[in-house]
Image 1 (spheres, rainbow, N blue to C red):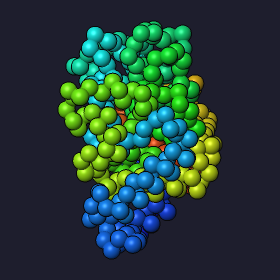
Image 2 (cartoon, helix red, strand yellow):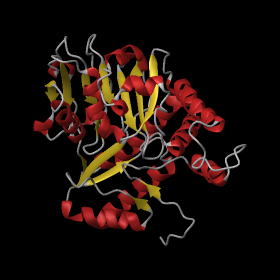
Image 3 (tube, rainbow, N blue to C red):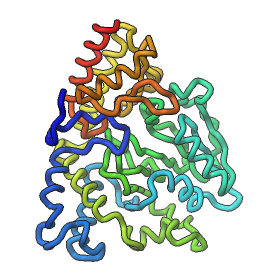
Image 4 (tube, rainbow, N blue to C red):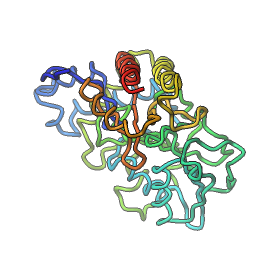
Length: 365
């Protein structure tokens, strides 16, 4: 396949990832002059009336699509999910307290490593010994009922595992890094103390971090914290204590509108399940391919797999790229192959991947 300047490939990248085409086209139209503003979104003041409307609509549409209750504040921050690894314990872990961490992959390991610099933490469960092929069962969780919070990663991009449902953590606030599956299916936000995510997989471009935090937890943010690392300050100033990522928030708002137009989280969840099922069926069909994650922990967002003959994996990725299936090479730490299929990834791309997998097996099987 010869690519031209106007040909869009099927983007299987784990992030920054595919965005809805209607969003890209609307942003293209507004890039030079946002309607009614006489300038680009990237030029307007973050305290201007046009940006007031952009910010308010982004939040209100997200609240509508994800049924975010008034009990939770919505913050648009910077620094990626990685900064939240530090901000969370700084704000929510009191002196003398402890927090529980459930480790199901590299990002959980990174999160607890940062938390250890700031206070006492416990490993409540880990699946590292099994190669992070699954998430823990409820009976494997060693939870402290007096913990300040329980932290887990909802979906593991590198290993292709995902919690099919959230565990019961009692009355302790549940804090989740949902960067790679946020709003990919229905979610009961009221169950969570904090939901946070980098935007660059399901919500928009890189550079925006969404934090949805229960308002009563804001009282834990000490005034002695550095101002830019204080949740309460960001909530008080409506995510505009400093200049936010204005263009990123604008795109996030467009994505939220697209999600609503697509039927909301119920419809997106059903579509994502259908897309993943088609690829897993092909992986399981003959044994030429083999999945990494255990069947009951398989991710709907990041499908990780190997070839029976691993020496063919580079050839698979290279041939796929030539056919317009981009970004299928697995993470450098684990190798293999990975198909990331977030909300905006089209079903036609899934069909193309399955056809390619069958043809590759026909030639090399």
